[in-house]
Image (cartoon, rainbow, N blue to C red; front, side):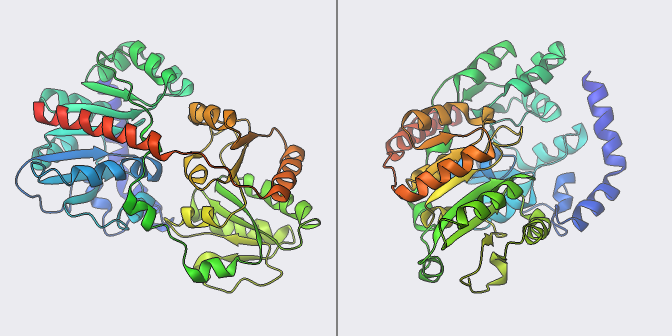
Amino acid sequence: MFFFYQFLIFLILIFSPIIFFIRILKNKEDKKRFLEKLCLNRIRKSSGELIWFHAASVGELMSIIPLIYELEKNSSIKMILVTTSTLSSSKIFNKFKFKKTIHQFYPIDFYIINLKFLNYWKPSVAIFVESEIWPSMFRLLNRKSIKLLLLNARITKKSFKKWSKFKSFSKDIFSNINVAYPQNLETKDYLKQLNVKNIKKIGNLKFTETEKNKKNTNVSLKLRNNFKKRIVLCASSTHAKEEILIGNVHKKLKNKFKNLITVIIPRHIERTSQIEREIKQMGLKSIIRSSNKKIENDTDVYLVDTYGETKKFFQISNICFMGGSFINHGGQNPIEPARFGINIIHGPYINNFRDIYDLFNKNKIAFKINNAKELITLSEKLLIKKNKKKFDLNNIGKKILKKTLKEISYEFIKT
């Protein structure tokens, strides 16, 4: 099975020039750095101990930022390598001012490329985040006796079913993991069934936040003044079709709240032009964030097409609709709006964050709706109340960060 997997990757490599070209045209690849995925065009490596983190995209990257800040204080760690797969995550990484942490794009999971990558970087520990399971790389890490940790591990029911179709292959791949730290009980059970021997539950790393990160999210006076006289409905991490849903909600609520403005922050900002067209077709007036245009009294929708500013809009919003939950996607992480005491509304599809939503629903800071009518009714009710909820996530996050740091430091020392 593994050889068949490598053969499929080899076929992808043959067509990779065409694939890269198309992705560059669609603004999904960095035209100057895409060769890093073939283990070319690398940054110069420092001598000494190196810890390697791999996070798929923005969400996974953001969850390890507090951890990286703490690990940078460890004098025995000379360099921290962070790899991600997406263009958006690389842009987010550049916003942080790290002292000894660098970013590279994750290499294509082919044996020769992976071998070249590991021979060059020589990590002391490899830490993969959440759902990042790569058969070729995992095998090589094992053969080179490089410790492999699966941090904040997340295996959904859907992905478990896929892995279960190839039992022998899956168990062989997952057995390469030295220690796994599941973010919920469901994942812990799936990891056991997938042949992971050493599993430790320390909590969900996404609850953590650094003081530096808090300071970087302060809203500028200009931005705050732009929304000063408006009631703000925020729709965050939206997916296709959800923007139309929110647009219709805005049209209904506007009859009652004349100064309502809806901020839409799409999960994938390359869809901005498409969303703008849809909003216009609905008879709504919009402004795109990057245009720097002034918000007018008749502006209906403020469309955010910039990276790393979501928290700023949470600070000025009255309520927040979390995307990915009204389509069968599994939801998006609601922790960030909860930090700012915003009432959170979500749809029925939240499998990816069920434990977090259960906690928030129990404490009445998140509310489930099943259809557009319920969304309109609940939004109106919450906008009238305008009350913010106090829910202390800092203590939860600090405890999880402390435990995680202790675990990683221990595993690093043992190598």
